Image 1 (spheres, helix red, strand yellow):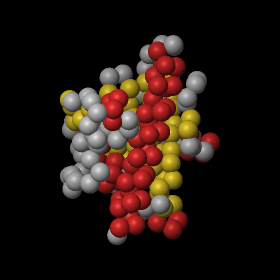
Image 2 (cartoon, one colour):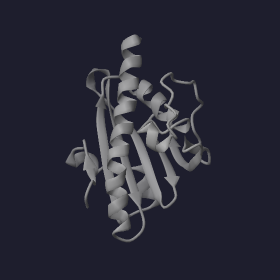
Image 3 (tube, one colour):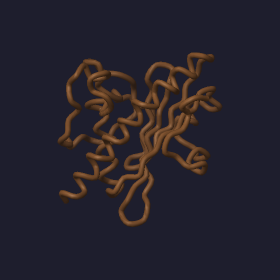
Length: 168
């Protein structure tokens, strides 16, 4: 499938994510990942920020409004919470949370799991798995279209977490 992988290892694509439990053997599966030079708790705090804005290409999915660059002290998400605020409205629902480690959400027919994996030296892997049901070519287009948006989102979250970690 076009666009199914960016920034992940073969081993990371074999991990079980929360979205797999909700939609096993999904016909569309995409993985994205980035290494962050910040500790897992800082990265997780930025994952929680997704409830406020998409953090990707704001001119596309946030009606031109910039996603916040100052982190809010948000409580841990719980199943049933809104997932994100994008396009001027609440989008999606939190399906499952393992605080500090993984957040799984649903938007339409798709589920996504954001995972925070600790690395040595206070670094972190931020992984995202997207799964969806549906037939081809819909799933091919979804996976391919998600790639640039998810890439920008993960890179933005990385940059914000790294800046916060440097500032102490």
